[in-house]
Amino acid sequence: MHIADLPPDAALIERLVTLMDGPSDERLVCFRARCEHAIKSVDIDRPTLALVLRGQKHVQCGNQADQFEPGDLLAVAPGVRLDVVNRPDPADGRYFSLSIPLCDEVLGAARLLWTTPLASARMDFVRIPAGSLCTELTALADAAEADDELRARMAVLALLTQLVPRGCGDLLLPPAPRLSAQVRELVAQAPDRPWQSRDFEQALGCSGATLRRRLADEGLSLRELIAQARLAHALLLLQTTRWPVKSVAAKVGYCSADSFSRRFRERYGLDASAMGNALPEAA
Image 1: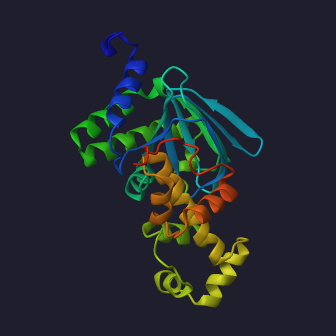
Image 2 (image 1 turned 180 degrees about the vertical axis):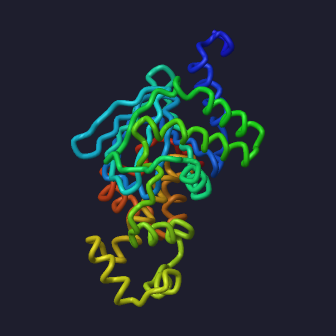
Image 3 (image 1 turned 90 degrees about the vertical axis):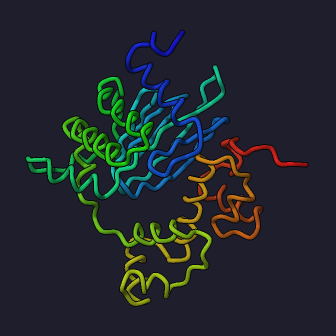
């Protein structure tokens, strides 16, 4: 069947698959997998949207659980920890989901545009069929094809204005200030850097004692947090590139691929090679 003969929402999904089935773009990132895998305790520091394009995604947070099919949009509030299972489509053996970044500029604009007071709906995550958002997602696809960042931001802004009345108001609420999120964001910018306490003290404008005390209030140590941030970045690379595990390990500051693989398995409950995206290594 030709794409033009598909229903509008199915045609849009196929168009996005074609658009995203190439090199990753930092503005629209496609998460890929060729093997079913379960990831435990994924920390979400920023408001996040993800659109399932191929396969299935099972998401659980506490007692809330839901199954996402192609065309379902996942909206996740900041400060949430998820358990996720990604299952490739049995027909073509691929899992795709499109990450739609919610940058500070778009979130700020949405807050200014929203005219009624926002109150927390105690949202962890919400599932919304993309068929009800075809206009906004089509505009986003048009902007991505044209490589037009301004149009892309306007499309995401329009998407947010549709999501907030559907139980997603927590996406716009400023998150409670958490030092751990700031530390993770700094490490993500240079995960292979040999981070020391003084680096964070200088960047965050606090003393070493204050840094340790505030992290302890969140139940974390600086060493543990740096390791978590490096592994979170490694998870992103494993899902969005075809690099072998040893290359990912080096990119996030590990000299030993074996040590990295062990730490990754301890953190997320699966082997680093479980996504099955890596190209075969030359003999």
